[in-house]
Image (tube, rainbow, N blue to C red; front, side, top):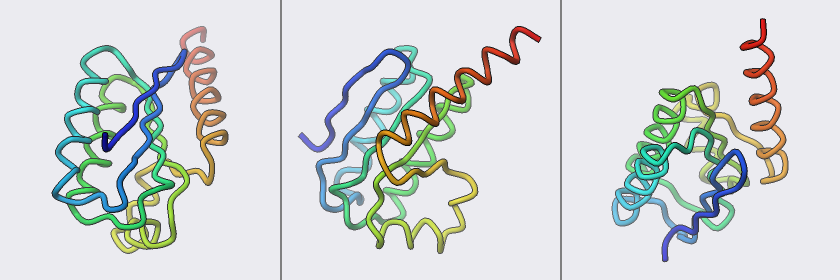
Length: 124
């Protein structure tokens, strides 16, 4: 299995089990993300700790996830990026578009903070 998905209280954790996020597995990731979105999951964390290479189709999958989450007032957080993947995101100038954290715990904290902020805005 290329991706392991665990649903938590307020988010889904998608763990990449692939060395290369490229044209061979990016479509599978996209379909998993679309499925999560269609089943009502607003917030997604993608853990790329095991992924050391990413190409344009992999980046496309991440951007699709970001768009799907934002479309339902949710959040996408990408975490534990290896240096080559981080460099590709920086070269593509996507670090200002994507939420990136060093660890899964920090990604979880960021999601919960954003959920609290959304709740506070609803009350005002």
